[in-house]
Image (cartoon, rainbow, N blue to C red; front, side):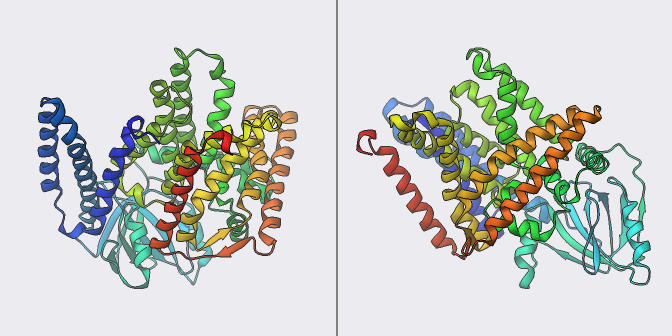
Length: 506
């Protein structure tokens, strides 16, 4: 890799290290002091620009990396303190706007309440064991945007929680939930939404509306959960057995509307917009239209965090292509990475965020090289499309495997096979679903497409369950952080070897 051509990567490395350092030593951080230090370093960098050529070349890089390191620490610390300081002072009462539909637990109902400052409280309401059916009807009548008021019996901050639920509380904290609370049955009330709804609540209502349309138009019960997960991002109703089968087959990413699906949508939109037939001078218009279409799609399907993250990443990649003039620039990935962490530093803890950029970055570094090496042989030149699919699947599977094992404790040995088998069905399902919505007004065509969607989703379930049932399709592996870093060091060494190896020697 020529570092001179990838200057942004040299800057996001100290930027990320600054956030990691802030996470490790957060109790000793003061964002105001860090902000002042950033200003001092930035002022010094302007001084270097006006200095002599020799002195500038020797010091400017160090100052720039120092600035980005302090910037990462400042942003992360500010985000942490904002959530930590949002815990209600009154520990006997809480109030908030219902941000998600209630979720039923074993002994309670969980309500995600948004406070005025944008942070959230997770309120658990005890069940009515005497009239459980009436209890379910009560929570079913709640609407997004309703105001919930509760006299709480217990409140616990997610920042300082310990014990066996430590990691769960840290997960909640990194998702803007400042506290968890519990109230017995009957100690809460609700008020209908009277104020203007927020954009997120509007998007989630759209998602619920699309869900009801799916239910009312003949989709099979087994297939509808997969179709909804892959098209509108609704995966709360997916059976546990189905989730397990997809996870053991190494294709659980199929069930989360994220970068994988947005990438397919981008390919479809590029095909329909005839982007590759346009001159470089006009391709930026095509990229801009595709980016707007992606955000409209995200708005219609609920603005889930994974979808927003993927849409933002592809928006930056699409717009930056107009500058870098290539399909997948590492500078584009680095710019998307930087902007997204500036928007929300806690994305750094999100597993989907980590997997997305590891997969996209590894494809950007190694994808074209492997495709070129394979296509270098005359016998394989006619199968360029198949080579591309295999190379992308192999690279993304290989580079994400250590991180998947670190977080989930298992590795799928047949993930490459699963991805190759399911990829055509994923593409078919998403393309057929677009046509299904387009021809919903025409029963003969929509009925035919409904049959196709049912068959596609059922076949995907069958493939995943079959592969998951094969002996040793999944290996239990729980690497620690040091082992995971060692694995990625080895993968980077392999990447360097492949990138520097001459074609004639392979």
